[in-house]
Figure 1: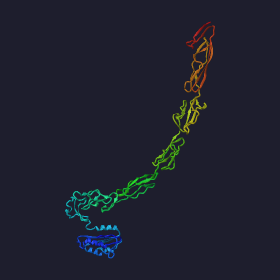
Figure 2: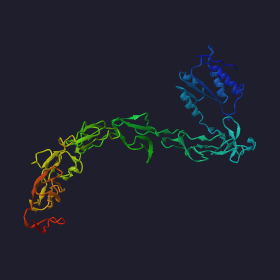
Figure 3: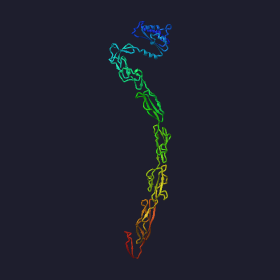
Figure 4: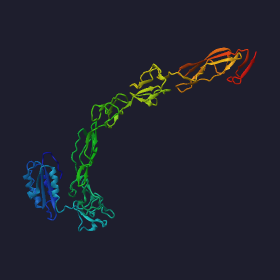
Length: 525
């Protein structure tokens, strides 16, 4: 019978007419052992044909023919009309508010003696051509009425010879009968078994909870909500579900203490908790820099702590010069930039070595002297400071802040002021018996010394052993000088030579071999 659907029109009468023709074959009654069901699903009430829309007559015919009628109304329906169509209004008439409840009703209706999909007991193997695997048996399909080889519990496949396979991990098959594959455990659950025969083997995965044994999916578990630390933040997404990770970051000038990235995990005792330790953000501090001989040694800082970006300025105490940057800044890595300066002591170079005299302290001419060292050059007896009056025998110079010695127009030295000493200066020599026109005169050279310890230079206008005219008178003058230009001219003596004049007699004459020896000579006029 051709039927058409028109909006807002409900033709239940023709529907039941069609059901009567299909089920009772023009009025033939069904055996009580054969269950025949007619299900009416409507969202309205009968209103067609206009002159006689009631399906009650055909409904009674179906009930009389052992046909069960279920009337289901969804939404706005005339529920008393539906109850009048069934044999047991309390059990066979249903009023549902929407199609979600209709799905629940379908589950309820399946709760009958034919809940199993396959029947294996008492099924003749020949129905399956005797071609079932040893792990299977011929089964009757209770839905379509077909016959197939059905694998035993824990196995799935076509059921034909060699085609029953054990259920893999996280799957199961809990009935004997045909199934091409095993049933997967509910979502987020599983097991490590093969050939599982029951859903009870399914357990929630770590981090999930639920009752998979009841066919329910396992849902992910949660950790407590994390919050950003003071002076910090959480970067990116921070979900609290199992396996989620949250990453922390501190504000500039602060450093993380604790675990920067924490993951939601399951700890001992099946407790949901975050990995690692609680994050805090602590202010970054640089170590205090002490500069020896600075004033003050720790510098003058914008923050006494000192925290990130603190500036410290340094100045050296008197007598020291700063080397490096006067200002340093605390950086994120807890180091100072630039490096702290140093205070180097002001020193003056070593004084020139003194040829004569001694420095006090003795180190003045050995190496550098620190500010404000005073060095004194002391001259020995017979010396004075070169640029000062002869009465001044010492000179003091001070190392000044600019690293130079107190100014002197010339380098102070010890100048010799004492002339050489002359000893054993010869006495006057008188010769009154010369017999020739010349005579050689010898004398002992005077002994000369100088306070410098250096033999002085000795000069004379006449030399010992020289020839002198006779008669004559000569003055011999010795000049003794030292390196300092000092002279001693206090040594002089006179040589007087006279001729011997007599008529007869004897006289003495010096021998040429030994002028000091006077042999006796007799002269005759």
